[in-house]
Image (cartoon, rainbow, N blue to C red; front, top):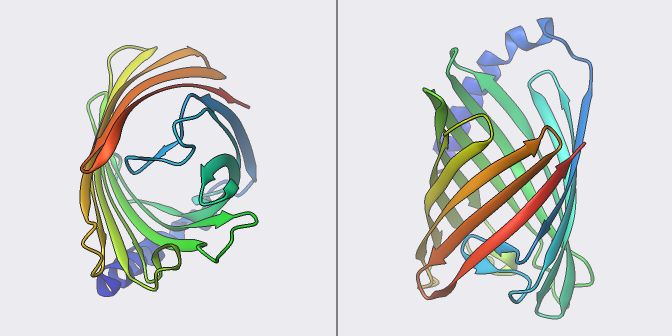
Amino acid sequence: MKKTIIALSAIASVCAIPAFAQDMTPKFSGSITLANDYIWRGATQTDNKAAVFLAGQVNIGNFYVGAGTENVDFGGINQEYDIWGGYVAKLGEKTSLDIGFVRYGYVDAPSNIDTTEFKAALTQTIGKGSLTGSVYTTSNFFGSKKSATYYEVAGVANLSEKVSLSGALARQNVEGSGGDYNTWNLGVGYTINKNVGLDFRYHDAEDLDSAFVASVKFSF
């Protein structure tokens, strides 16, 4: 896996050369999302209770960095914060490669379970939709000292200007844990306007409870 990440990083570095001729003006975006549950890789993070997500991101050319926070309810922890960043390399008119990282942090956690994952995601535009294959890897999975890898294939089909169908199939592997599992989700999105969108999604995973999540996202 390390060799794969290094190879993909090299590709991104080569594709990065023309980026400096592009518009390097920082572009800021943010969002607030309200949901009846916070599901992460098939597992509830809020004990099946409502969640509020705040997020912001800045894009400079093909580079991006962002941060967000949301409430959680497990192990005596009530708040999570996330930091992410990366580079999106254009490999053609319809293909892009995203190389980056995601940092999951927890406020006032009784033990250090903060985790950093490195990711590589290849997206191909197909008609009015897209297909993305992603890999996330870490050497210390939530304080376990074990390496872990998450594989996901996700697709989006835009049925109209306002309605979209999306879903994902994924597998979480954790070294020597015996807790590897498959997970999937399927949902419908509805765009009210350029700043407000709805999502209705069903989540399921092996040995975990299934869940239906309804959310509304306000973008600015």
